[in-house]
Picture 1: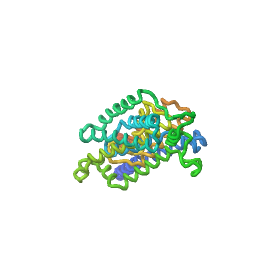
Picture 2 (picture 1 turned 60 degrees about the horizontal axis):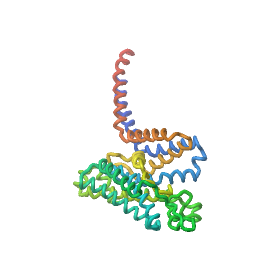
Picture 3 (picture 1 turned 135 degrees about the vertical axis):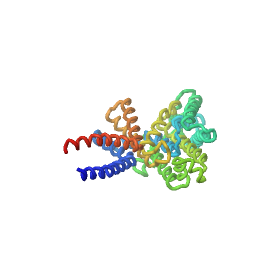
Picture 4 (picture 1 turned 90 degrees about the horizontal axis):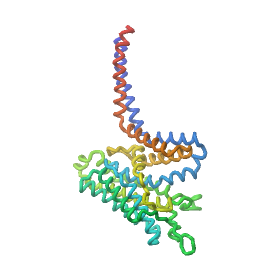
Length: 371
């Protein structure tokens, strides 16, 4: 009996270590596992319809503007911050793009950088508020969420602005027709050169993710972002200008929101005063599902890309299966909770330790009866 007890005692820590490693591995691969599960669910339930090129392109294109927001949100989250105003920034940039097109008849190649500049200014305001004024990011961006939305509604007088501008001949003006390439379904880039062409929102999303990942993994700026999120005090003592890094990530987040604004306006063929509402929730969810830690210092743009794909394809397959919008919200909320729990293996370890202690209490009594 002593030998059996010794063996059991020795096996206990070994099993616990193995279990902890498995939990850590599961947390690091949660995005990829989730993507495989969603793909499997779509293939099993809808088969060819789900996997068709047109369906996947339309699905990713519809989510592209939120995916671009998620890239900017990831940069902020990596520094242990959060930006709740990205949806309002996108909405204001969308309205600015439509008004520049309709009222000023500016070409798209002028509208896009103007909107990006507008977004960068809004992001800079968030960065200055969180650093120089020492306002918590949650509070600062919650306030600017309201401010930017109010400016949007004031500019538009609470009226949607259409981007399908017709000339005297009844046809779309040249600038309005070109503006459709930003995301109006059925209007692709490089048509005839690359098959049926490339849907601009999909191309823009992929390029933003590639550039963002390279910036984080291959530049000093990226190392500073991780350092600030991992341990801000240590980063400051190491010579990193932490305030400058924070201002930079908030500014980049705003710039990307400004970039996504015209895409959203072109996709909807209009700029609505409420455009972008709740987009911040999808952006944060994509980052978290992709493995970004809200405590900062951990995550990647690749993970966010995977998280955005999960939300995109999940919305698509649930819609194909006629699942109600209400139930879709419940499912997505539960997925975010699971993703956060998997990022906290200590919670699962605590539960496992509790079960193990309960099992140990019962073990001596059982051994006594058998002897």
